[in-house]
Amino acid sequence: MLESLGVGRNLVRRVSYFIAHHHTYTEIDAKNYQILTEADFFANVLEDKTPCEGIEAMRNNIFKRLQVQRFCAIYTYRICFCERNQ
Image (cartoon, rainbow, N blue to C red; front, side, top):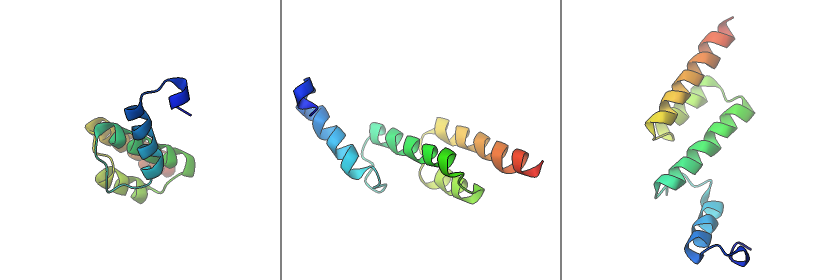
């Protein structure tokens, strides 16, 4: 489908890899895959109302980029300590 739109073969292969492996967290092989994984996890946190312990585990084990770790720490503090203690 992507090739019919003129997308190059290498990009088609990469997108196909992401689709096939987007729930495989032990084989993150590049920055773009790391970003996709972090975004997927953080979307799940927002949608599923993940418990604070789960968010902390993600921050320690999944989120590798400093910006995401910081954002996660702020979010965790706000949700787990401020809003839930009101």
